[in-house]
Length: 477
Image (cartoon, rainbow, N blue to C red; front, side, top):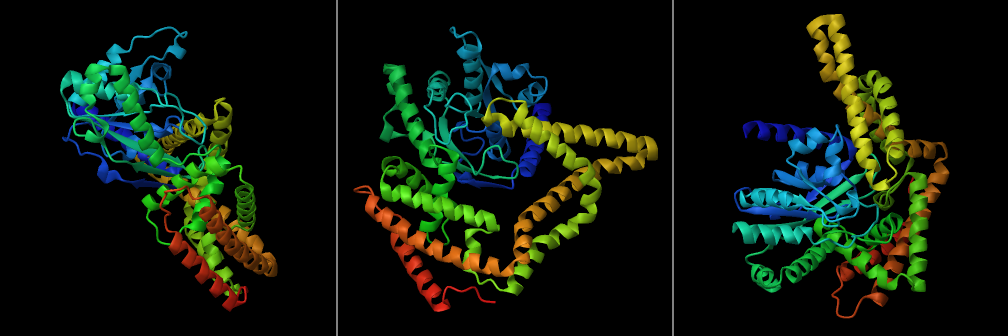
């Protein structure tokens, strides 16, 4: 038991380190809603847009020791098998993986029941398969069957905790992800949805379908759904143009969810199409000059641009001495991992997982090989190489990121006047789009829906317009 705990903790630490390197930012919201160890069995149910990255995030930041139901074909991989066993994964047979006939998963269900009865935590992705869609797919009833079955057969206290996994750009190295935990669905104290165990005893299929509907609603409240990732990013820009400053993460997600849900019913309206076209063009102009929307609210003089440039490059210069030796090793590994990540899998939703596994495997293998050579040449002192190489890899990553983020700004310095004019034009365009967003929200707000932050947003736009008029829409020098 102690060995398994230590092994799980070691794997958890390694996964968290790898994800911290892969993602620029990992945010967690609602972790206080997850029942603590000793408060009964927990079933985490989440959306599944990014293959093995999804369970890895729950292992790293779920707050519980999580066991997963994983398709049995994954256990055939020599690379994945020891990791799956270390995290207590339970193999599930899927009909599509075994000729399309009926399959017997009773042993797997019994194993999951036991873990829940012991107060453990289980992770399930009820969409059934990872996908590359920007919206939640129809849910299978497996999570509901396991929850109701465990509660009925073992008498254990079981709750379902929905978790939304929101990626800025799935598959992209150094992108961002938000894990958002929702209110637990308590099977024994949830009167609003009926007495689940009584319903299951009377009609198990009807109870499973009803509980799956509840899970679906909970996940949709925690995720942002759209027809494709580009539309999702444009809607996120619309949300930023609308919202007042200082919103919490939860409020931003709720606002994003409302925009993505409402978009489906109004996307064919001419004014909505025109708005999204303008927002997309605005984003492209921002990307071209290398700025964010936050950068438009400040004055930009020559000294400001120089200060920003040195601020972005100064830290990279501090990392540079440590990064230079490692760059020769790690940059080729990153290129190889990126190429293999795209070529080793035909499915786009598995690219991030492949990049992570290939990159980690190549790095660790290279570090061990170079350390062995160093020990052979310098004796025990050579072991220090095993500590310096990961640190050098991190330094290389920081230097490359700083260079990439400062490149567009450096180019702007070469044509300072064009930069200033473009910033002023973008500021005016942003104010125009803010007005347009507010007008479209008012025209298409569903009947009976209470608007979020409408008055604050209108006040913000009015204040910005007054400030712009006072400044003469110029960028001070």
